[in-house]
Image 1 (tube, rainbow, N blue to C red):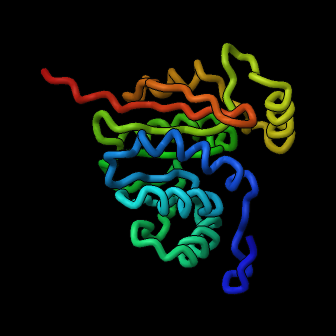
Image 2: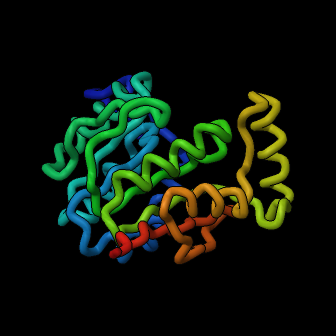
Length: 207
């Protein structure tokens, strides 16, 4: 997807391949949302696709500073009114003010170290409005087992790149989510042995 106006715009083939299946899940999930925060927006491709198909909401991109120039190029080319400039967000740093009506993140949990995955859930738990969803897309393990040989190879490849990386186990994520006030409410199978896990912020308890 080359454009002479944006010659350095990043591109991810995986984003093109999974954007429609993900939209089929998050479209209904965010049907009443007004502001959604995407954590780890990567190239910005997902944001442009989702922003165009979910015009009723503001889709707020975010990522570490090195990724922001590429995201800005995608947003500039799209010129969509519901895509504000990307935010600089490191899960270990400052988070934007909440509450937000939803959070989305794709292919981040296996890149972040375990401590940062905990910070991810803690931050999401802080900024989500009560009852609001958090959709987390990617490969996951169940009962310490991979769901496919390809995911096992991918996990080994990740750990060879950096020992902090790796495909996360659902039981571990449940514990982190519980501590952050989030409950798992849906687990959607996706193409290529991925899943979309949907967590929901618990309603505030009344004394």
